[in-house]
Image (cartoon, rainbow over all chains, first blue to last red; front, side):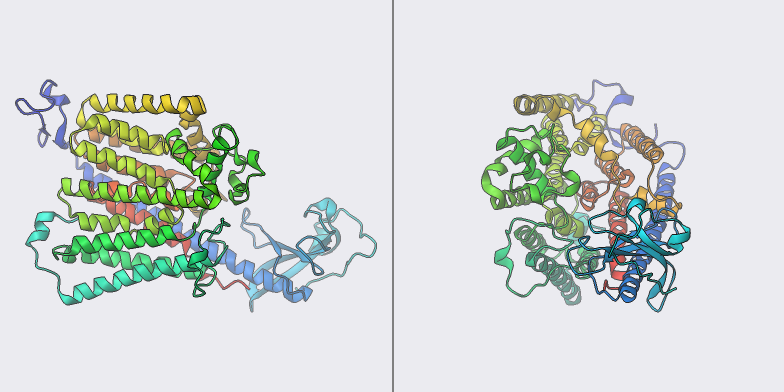
Length: 176
Length: 442
């Protein structure tokens, strides 16, 4: 084959092997320009990965912006400047619907009744619209059977499965 | 770019003052960025610094503040920019009579600073210590149980939440190397893991230097390309990852093949694979390239030797690295390219069918590389491409996985490999910058 160079000279390494099986110091040349094809594929792969990375960065930035707006919205509506607020974002269906839950009083996260807001729509002046919400009793996870006092869109979506416990907060909270 | 021909370098004029000043500035940026990260991380626990036994109290001089995403990302970008500029300048600086000495001092200083600091970005080192303590202090086989079985051990609270129930995925050679850490106490074990990483790093760099000489590349430039690489320094050394131990054995194999000692090279590849399974990928390329069975006999001898030592300790479980690979292959990390591609295609993430497609793609790449190696293509390049392909097609990509191919790439004959490694690392770094573009959390 043209361009092939084996390392096995007289008395050299691999001289007992047939010519085509001997180790080579240079690659055989084929019919086509393999290197050019490989380079083209590598450039294409890089471009695809680069687009995917930039797309993912933009997606993450949007998600972070949404969280920031959501937190400000929750704090403004509830009047509670909490640090520990749980955020559940709908990233699967690519909607802008987020559910934020936080304590209605002071104490470690989840130890007080939770005020939860359903926040949707675009960010306007750093905030988004709360279209509805519900409450959760202390120490209970956010499941339908634990939610009570639904308001706004949470009523029509039938998100609550629990009657309001006596003495629990039940005031509707919305800004939209 | 990162590797220049020795003889060509000898014929060039010594660098001008402007070049040296610019290079000096780059060096200062590298040192400043590293110090910033280390001193801030030493202040205490943050999202970037896992909770750890207090080993860095002596670094708390009151000048750092808790390491946040913004400061870290700015330091990472500055570090990367200075590193890239230094590599661009390398061709002009390399003829300087002191270039080799400067490169050693720079890389040595960065390495020592990083190893003197706290554990960064990962709890892996605590898993290493937990597995060692399970085996040595609690009589539990780390290949059968996760750290959850030593809930009352003081290391337990430092192990990452995702790994509490997971048996070790590392090879028996690494597990045996980590066993002495168990008797050093918590802080001693962390320092011990750091010393292991430091020694492996020094060994990898020394071997890379030697391989660069053997191939006619400028070893000083190659040393900087690996030892001052941002992901190598900040993530690889910062987390004291055992990937550096794997690269040490890999580069030992490369150096041994370059000096025509294929049998010990085969044993060294097996040692790499028995630290982390991916290290074994060099073996078929060596065999196809050299067409000698001595590498295979060396590999078999190495495997038998380690099996004889590890069997009484771990039984057969220690040698079953394939099941650990399969388990990890099912995981998905946010930084993995398949996950990013899935998002680009409008999917929420990677599905089982995608794992199959990725495996098929990886097999196709490896078969192509094997075929090319048979035809005489550089086996070092082929091994590097394979390691890079594993990292890119893996759904569980971490920063230190992009380091596997780096020492091979700087001594490979195919310069496209080094460009590809840098491109993948560049994309990885770009993917980290979202917090820098997002509004500050309130």
